[in-house]
Amino acid sequence: MINISADNNLLSDNQHISAFHLEPIVNLFSGQVISHELLSQLSPSRDADAFFANLPVDHSMALFCHQVNLLKSLQKTGRYFLNLPFLALIHDRLFTRLLDVCESWITIEIQDAPLFGTLPRQHQLCLCERIKLLQQQGISVWLDDLTDGCIESFHHCAIYVGGVKIDKQAFWRLSKNHRTLRQLVAHCADISPHIVIEGIENSHHLELARQSGATLGQGYLWPHKRCVFTDTLSL
Image (cartoon, rainbow, N blue to C red; front, side, top):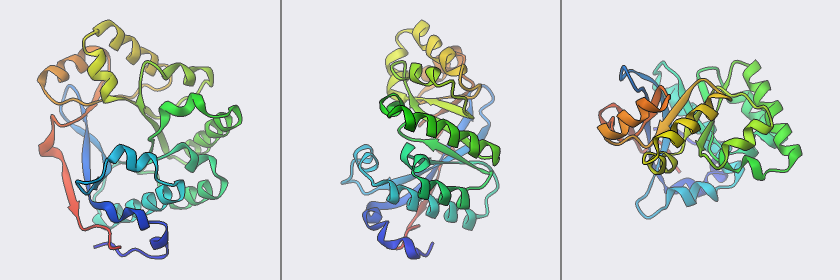
C-alpha cells in the first residue's frame, strides 16, 4: 500500500478513488502492447467524467505525483501514460513541480485537449512552449479525446506532440462514415505520427480502426491485458 504524505489535504476528494488499473495501448496489427495508461477507478456512485472535469488542478497534480510513486513502487519497466489538465502545464508553480517529478518513462496525456481552442491566446502559446520544454527533457506529451470538431485549433498553433488519441465517441460516430474517419486520422497525423483510436470493443471496431490509417488502439477488446491495483491510496 502506498503511503500518502504531505499531499493528503490536496487529495481529500480522492477518497472516491478505490483502485487504479493499467489499460493497454495496443498495436492494431500485431496485438503487441506498446504502453499502458494508468487510470483511476472510482466508487460506483461517482461519475468519472464529471469527477475529473471538476477536480481542482492542484488535486490533479497531487494525484499525478502519487501515480508516479505507485508506478515506481511496482518496479515494472515500460512506458506509462498519466493524465493532467492543460492548467497543470500553464500554472507556473505546478509546472515547476511537474518538471521535478516527471521522468522520461512517463508520457503526459492532456485530458482536456478538446478545450484548447477555448483558451486565451496567451495560454495557448504558453502551453505550446511548455510542451517543447518537456520534450527537450525527454518527456513526451500526448493529446487525448481529439475529435473532428477540435483538431483544427491545433493546426492554427503549429503544435507538434508525441501522439494523439481519437475520442471513443467520435470513433463510434464516424465508424458509420469511413471517409470522414480517415480524414480525421489524416488531420491528426499533421501534428503527430502516433495515433491511438479509443473505444475499440469488438472485432468490427478493430477492422475499422485498421482501415482508418491509425496504428494503435485502446479499449475493452483487450481485457486480458489489463491490470488492477486495489487499495493503492491510503486516505
